[in-house]
Length: 190
Image 1 (cartoon, rainbow, N blue to C red):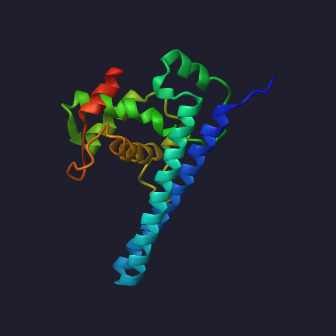
Image 2: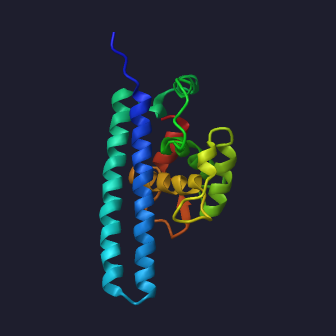
Image 3: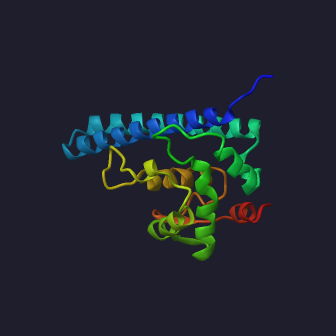
């Protein structure tokens, strides 16, 4: 019998996405430095490169979601099944909590906050909801921003994915997250 360890594929996707996000942060820093130095050509180049890498990250995220559908999405599994899959073996050191784990806590936070709220208020609740889920590596700062823990960055990327999927409004004012009817249905299990 051939056994397939699907969790290692999911882990590989998460590691690759994390590395791409680190490259996006680096390009953002370079663009910022170029803009401050009034090197507008350099800033424009960084902007274009950042847009290309971000588009690539979104394609990879779509492939990750497609993979999850092929093996059975974690979203559709009950808590017992998800717990069993997490216990299939220790995750390699350095692997952050998968982006999918942020979806329900973000939606729950938004419901508790009346459907929309500022980023900081939402992330404060998400952190509490994810107590026991987040791993040590999630609390480490990003190399590109020593003041930003990895989990906050991952939650913000999850927000972008959720907006593309229609669970959150994509046209909310900057810094404000808003749940959609589809997001409410998703949280309700529908």
